[in-house]
Length: 222
Image (cartoon, rainbow, N blue to C red; front, top):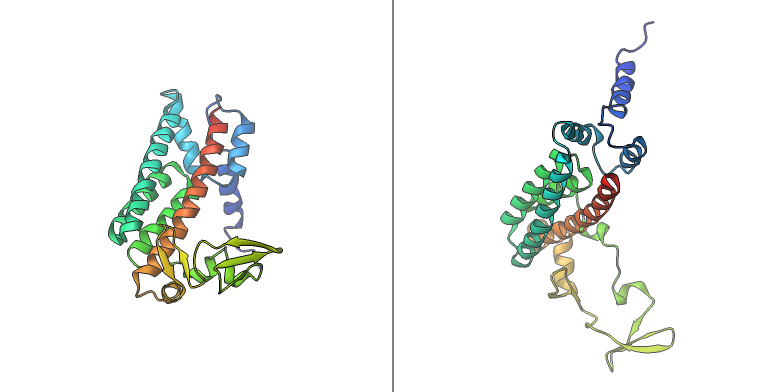
C-alpha cells in the first residue's frame, strides 16, 4: 500500500519559513528570539525585512508608523466605546487589523479582527462575557462581606469603605451599572451592551498584545 502523499511537502514548507532570507544586519539570535515569541508571522515579517537591503531602516520606519497609528486608533476606540458607536468601532478594528496583518503582527491583528466583527454584531468566535470575566465582585468572591447598615466591608478583620453598592459596579468607561443590567447584557446578543463588552475584552487583549509586540520589536531593532 502506498503511503499518503503531501506529508513531506508540509514539513518542507515549515522548514522554508524557518530559513527565509533576512539581511545580515539582523543577527540570527535576534531572529530566532522574535520567531519564538509567537507575536509575529515570520513569513510575512521576514519579507518586510528584506526591503531593508534596498533602503536601510525601511522596515523599522514602517513599524514606527504603525505604532503611531495604533496609539491614535486605540484612543478613538475608547471614545467610540463611550458613545457605543458600533459602526465606528467596527471600522476602527478593520483599519488596524489590515495594518497589523500587513506587517505580520498577529498578536494585534487577531484581536482587531474581533473588534471588527463584534462591531457588526457577528459573534464569530462564540464570545461569552461570563466566560471571559477574570475578576469577581466583592459579593461573589467570598473574601469580603458587605455591611448593610453602614456601607462598609470587612476583610481580615479590618473595616474599609466600599466604593460602590452591592448591586452596582463600573464598566470599562467608568459608568455605574446595576447587577441586573450587567447580567441582562451578559448573554443577550440583541443588546448593544453585549457587543460593547465583547469589544472591551478584545481591546484589552489588543493593548496587551501591542505592548508585548512593541517590546519584542524594540529588542529586535536595538
